[in-house]
Image (tube, rainbow over all chains, first blue to last red; front, top):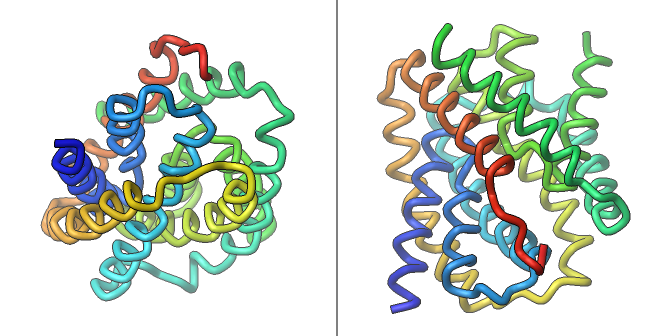
Length: 118
Length: 121
């Protein structure tokens, strides 16, 4: 039963990842929440990343094969991405991100609304 | 022009490492600051995520406990799901894709603002 739920949410997560290039984490974290409610939040977050990584790799290959991954424009972001990602992960245990999360949540809602209603 | 992209990428990656903002920020940046089409911005976002999260995971994996059996099932199912997802993205008109993306952003924001804090958070 647990395996079935994992498969269903896994496919759902992958579908969102392939469709939008992001966002599959919501389904993964939801599944981990209901199946392993005692799991520490940071283990849950790390687990989600560990799952979405291979998913994103598969998606990236397909996007690239379809001509939708312009590396000449993406290349500039890769080193900042690696450095920033590592720095952020190190800072996670030292910073209370609650307010940062809220500020960006508001930004996301505004940006999302602009995309829908523009 | 390049410098601002580097700075934006760096800041967005730090936020991603902190678990803030999700995958939407870079796509928002790319579609507002450049004329890259929605689907290609999503493609770039995927490799951005690969770079940022590989780096982030290297740090996390030392301190966190992960259940590799569970993660394998999720990852393999996910890989299958991506095939359907990408096929849909490639077939969808760009305006529709943007609106769905907008919906995801609203959902992500709402989840953060309205979820109850559990004792383990």
